[in-house]
Length: 460
Image (tube, rainbow, N blue to C red; front, side, top):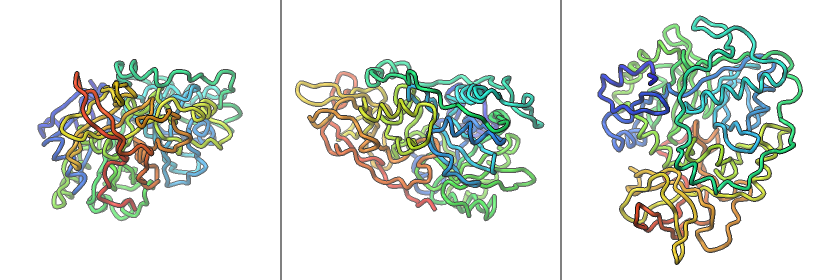
């Protein structure tokens, strides 16, 4: 099992460790409920070094990424970031990711841990499709360019096989882009150099109302001066740290990219600086409940190769006006007749919503969808979840969602809402009565507005 540079620290701190996507990661230190509320009310420090980190440089980097990314890189300028998706030719999601532009022809890419290998393979294959593969020799800790030999290692948890089997009917009838020309045509106008930096870098996140003050006290005013979805490189004790104002909790916060050898010194410095403000280490358990409260999708749950951006309500991160990108025409077809719709759900009384539970309505009781994620909300004190519905809960014929109408989670996963304020979106079904089948029992529930809670801090 893989370990982050902070593994020994987590063990020494007494964290409860679990296998997550082949990584031995802390799920909690003091408890999920306590850590969740610490982030909402004070500040939390996350080790998220298990995520994947790539670099794309050169005059062809923009063309390559633009041909694969659903969002439009023309929106980016150096020092800014953009959320979007890699989709396949069928319009299914290969991954959701953030691209940071560091220079005129220099991009930094953050991807999900479970998809690191698939993302890297996808980038390399499409770079090669232009007749120019990644250039240079295999990357080493001392520099150089990443070649094809760097794919080692990640064991992806991916989509739950059980949930995948049960969700497949929701996405049937979707045909691939048969006969559609691949987006990757034309010229890269020069080389693109790709590096997989995942094994030689670490990634931390500081999230919560006091995040700016804490990060600023350690990394200086450049960090706190960043706007939401901005990024900058700062020097810390002679080491280069990429500071980004992004996160996955709904609160204001930062994600920090750094050499792996700096992870523990910087972690300790942040904890020391943040002690007066209540900064606490936070595990993956609270990271999951925080993102569910915000309606952020998680790969393998709300998005996958079977659940595309149309069904997941992420069309606002798909620029269908772009000339071409992989999956564009299939996504357009899905948007004309969506096969499913993602909604928020909440139990009316006690109980716990879990993945895979069926959602039902009517008499006789009829299944209309499945829970994709569920948790107990420490803020609302009730069980909440996200559900992929293939039928309407209000009796009217299911028409799916045209464009994003009614499907939007408040913000996407990975780095949240891509610079967009998490507006309180509605499906038009809020308050509709449903039932959730928990084991052999049907429990009363309702369609709920997403996000479920209002973040405690504004994103500057």
